[in-house]
Length: 259
Image (cartoon, rainbow, N blue to C red; front, top):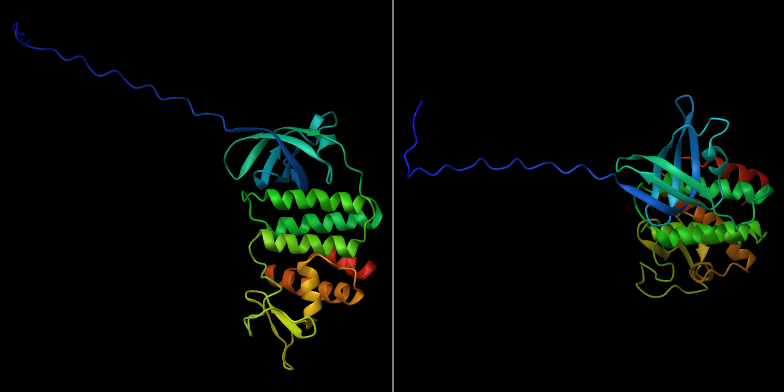
């Protein structure tokens, strides 16, 4: 065994650095709404939530299908919730969901309109992309529907807000072919990627008046012509963003009330 002389310095081994435990990523008390849910395993649900500060997220609600689960009664569509979850993966784990109250329930046609809004959000919003302005618009839209405000006007405003907040809505008051303001008496078509241009005889896209475009930008839907043309235009623009995918609830609305 080797010996150490008096001048030899012995260096103590470096202490092992203990690994800090991973923090449990929790979000507590976040305002949210259920957009859609479906069964997961025997007793749980996978729930699509629309939250104010985190956008659309997916959560697993463990045990939510059990008869005495507190989550079972809370996870209803169109009801304002205070939601809490943990995890950072694409599917979080729902910790709690409490009914907040303060909103009237949707009934009859308003209920169907609500499902249409939810289907739009599920199909057009990317997950984990916050849209607090759109969330507030959603709450306002549900309230307007619950108070029996005209569905045509309410839906057009929300559809337009959705396209704006997701960054795919052009300014309807600027003409791309003349580079000037839209004229109220001129007819236009709206390119889904560029915006309005002067209509041509060969156009197959919906033709709308400049007044309609100006009214839509100002959220003024009192004119019956604006109502009719904006409905056709928004149907066209949404179909483009959906890549041709069918909205089941919209087809029902078209069949029932031509909304």
